[in-house]
Amino acid sequence: MMRALVAGLVLLLGAAAAHGNPADPDRREARIAFAKGSSQASVKGKLKGREYVDHLLEARGGQHLTVRMEASNRMAFFNVLPPRSEEALFVGSLNGLEAKQQLPVDGTYVIRVFLERAAARRGETTTFSLAVSVTGTPGPVGFEKKLEKDGIAFAVSSPNLAKGNEVRVVPGGLAIVNDPVSQPVEGRAFDADVGDLDGDGSPEVYVFVRGAQGRITLAAWSANKRKSLSTIYLPPLAQFKGAAEGWRGGDFMMVSGARLVHTFPIHGADGKPTGKRRQLDYKLVPGEASWQLALDKMSEF
Image 1 (cartoon, rainbow, N blue to C red):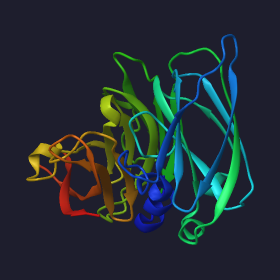
Image 2: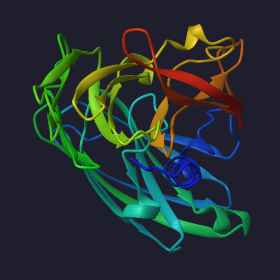
Image 3: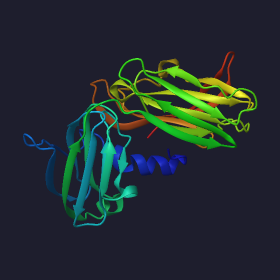
């Protein structure tokens, strides 16, 4: 995942979160439906300025999504967003005009077409066409990722079962114990990252799990004094005054320098998005029985 807070949030959330409010007058919505017996469809449209279109597509976890885009303006892109989340699976401004993704979960995916910010501010226009296909058999999508920091390796895996799922980490390079560790989780692991939040030279591994309502939970361990793995505990939002107000899921989480950053869209009392996001910055501190992530700063933007 992106490590620089500013760069990460701008690149991954820039076109998505900035435009992700269903009440936004610049937003249009259209559903993509395949004809009976077909697994592909074509979509055409036009955009001007800050307008953007969310194309909604129903798909199953384990299936393969392919999206190809052609546009008259080279500053037109698309992102692919998973169900109930603004954290893009595919970012067109970084990865080009063709996406090939194995889908992690069942639900409604969003193919968001937009003009890059500078072009949008200038009021530029574009025509575009999308070729969309969904193929393959639905089923659990396992997760595997190998990470390394400061000479310590972490092999992360999860079968991503609908029930009874767990995250497993096999360390390497620790001085005393390199046995695998595991933790039960509710949801499916979709990414992992390493960091050294407290700067003690003993890295940590953070595994991000997406559950119901687009909620992200965490399974994490620290290479305690580079000898063995110790669990890291992240307290629930409700433990911090005001942190859970307006939360309805759609979380984004990443390692950024010496902090773990958690953001999510804020909803009003009526349940509708306000257009703002809350950001929680956590630091790593020793606890009585394990390492803990303590809230260092809370802000809104």
